[in-house]
Amino acid sequence: MIVDDLKDHGRVQIDDLVASMGVSAVTIRNDLAQLEQAHLLRRIRGGAIAAFTSRHDGDDGLSVPTRLKEKERIVSAAVEMIRDGETMFMSSGSTAELLAAHIPAAIKDLVVVTNSINVARILTGHEGVTVIVTGGTLRPKSNSLVSPLGDVLLREINADLALLSASGVHETRGFTNSSWAEAEVTKAMVRAAKRVVFMADYTKINHIASARIVELGRADTLITNKAAPTDFMKAARQKGLEIIAT
Image (cartoon, rainbow, N blue to C red; front, side, top):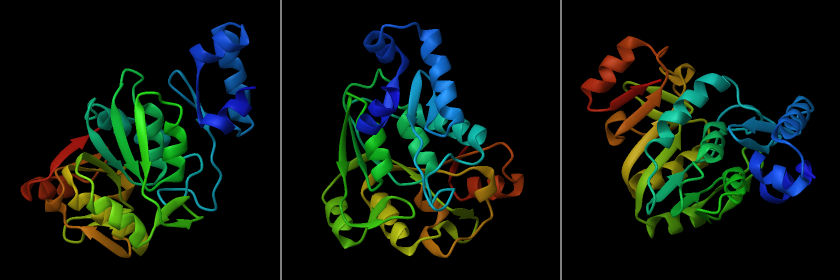
C-alpha cells in the first residue's frame, strides 16, 4: 500500500498512513526503513518520497542525492524563505527535489512553477501547493522540461521568489549549469523573479560548468555550506551577494 501511494502521489505522510492502515507510527516507520533499504523510497521528516531512478546522480540526475546531509542543511535554510500567498520558481535537480519534499505542511497557499517532473510529482501530495509545469521537451537524464515553450510561459509569470540549483559557482564566471538547455530555463526564471536564490553545496563552489546562467551579482542570495572556500565567500560578498553558509 505504501509503495502504491508513492506511485500515485510521490509523497506519503506517517500520520496519513497510520490513519489509513490502522497501525502504529512505530510500525509505519519500520516499514519505511525497510522500503528505503530496498531503494523503493527516500525517507524525509514525517514521511517519505518516491526514490526516483535516473542515469546520472547529482543536480542533472535525480536518484538518491549525494552529500545528503549538506543538501539537507541547505534546504532547511531555503524553506525559511517560503511564504504563503507567493509564487515561486523551482528548477530541477536533487536539491530541488529535497526542497519540494520539505515544504512545510503549514503552507496553505503557494504556487510553484517548475520545469522538473520530479518536483511536480512530489508536490502533488501537498494540498497547500498549486503546481504549474512549464512544458517543453523532456530531458530523460534529469526528468526536466526544456526548450522555448517553457520560456514563453516564464515570460508571462511574475514570481516572488526563485529557488534554483547550479552545477557550478565561480567568482568570475558566475552560476553555471552542465546543460545549455537547462541553463536557458534557469536564466528565464532569474529574469522573472523578484528575489533570486541559488542553492549549491560546497563542492560546486569554484567549479565552472559549460553553460553560463548569470553572474554572481544577478542573484540575491547563495545558500551553501560552511565548508565552502572562505576566499570565494569573501569575494562573492564584495560583489553584493548574500551568502548563507549552513
